Structure formats: structure tokens, C-alpha cells
Amino acid sequence: MLIRQATRADLKAILTIENSSFEAERFTRSQLLYLMTKARGLFLVLELEEEIAGYLSVLTHKKPHSLRIYSIAVDPARRGMKLGQALIEKAIAYALELGLPALSLEVNTENSPAISLYARNGFEAVEILEDYYGKGENALKMIKKL
Ligand SMILES: CC(C)(COP(=O)(O)OP(=O)(O)OC[C@H]1O[C@@H](n2cnc3c(N)ncnc32)[C@H](O)[C@@H]1OP(=O)(O)O)[C@@H](O)C(=O)NCCC(=O)NCCS
Image (cartoon, rainbow, N blue to C red; front, side, top):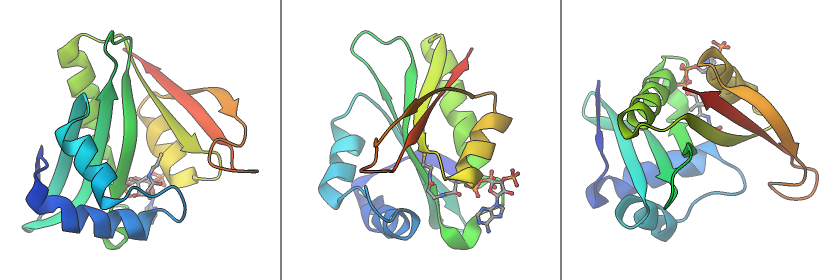
């Protein structure tokens, strides 16, 4: 397993994972490219047997007070193998490297695999954001203090 910085050459594989991971609120190719090349943060891919099996996008603010886990997804065929765990560990390590006091994220309140992954890593639910993903689609805001 290898976790490395994403490049343009990975876009097709990332988009395939994106489209099979999210129903609504999916990133387009150009949004992913923006996150990869222009956004302030880190865009990582996880390679398994020379194939892209997952990705992680984290963002920092201009005056950072926390590292935001913006998106994470693993190829549906490779879930439950702790690849998401490996990506979360990279996010935590990056926040520590930057000397940030916390990580934050939003997750759909119905998304139990993701919520359990975050909870296992010390994220705590702090707020419910109503209609965050559209009418009736609420988000849980979670924070991990370092
Ligand atoms: C959330 C996600 C990244 C986790 O990736 P992963 O590599 O499966 O993560 P892990 O193996 O470290 O563990 C994830 C949890 O899913 C469970 N799981 C196991 N097999 C699974 C499978 N085949 N499908 C879905 N979830 C599974 C794991 O058991 C674990 O939860 P548990 O220990 O409480 O039972 C992945 O489910 C995913 O890509 N989901 C779609 C995108 C998404 O929702 N991203 C989060 C947006 S905030």
C-alpha cells in the first residue's frame, strides 16, 4: 500500500471512485482538479497493487484553526480493509505536522460506516447541520482535538 500526493494522471481513477461512492453532491473532474492543484491543503491517493483504491482531500484556512477533512472515499470493492483508516491517519499526521489544534469534518447523519471510522479515531459530534446536503439531508459536524 502506498499513500502519495495525487497528480492529474490519477484524475480518471479518482472520478470513478467518486461516482461510485456518492449519489448526490459529487465532485466533478474540474472540482477535483481544483482541489488537487489550487486549493490550500493536501490531496492524497492510496495505491494498492498499482491501482488507485482511495483518495483524501483536506483543506486548511488562510489563518488555520483546524484541518478540514473535505472528502474521503475508498473504492467500494476495497472497503472494510482499513484503507479509510490509513487515509484518516495521514490527515491526523498532517494536522500535527502543521501544528494545528484540531481536525473538523461534516458527514451525512445516515452515513454510519464513515461516522464509525471517525468516532474510532477520536472525532466527536458537535453539531447537526440541517439540510446541509439538500432538503432533509442533514450533516453531523465532527471535531477531533489534538
Ligand atoms: C467511509 C469510507 C471512506 C471508509 O473506508 P474503508 O476503507 O471501508 O474504511 P475502514 O475499513 O477503515 O472502516 C470503515 C467502516 O466500514 C465498515 N465496513 C466493512 N466492510 C464494509 C463494506 N464492504 N462496505 C462498507 N463498509 C464496510 C467497517 O467495518 C468499518 O466500520 P466498523 O469498524 O465500525 O464496522 C468508505 O466507506 C467510503 O468510501 N464511503 C463512501 C464515501 C463516503 O461516505 N465518504 C465519507 C464522506 S464524509
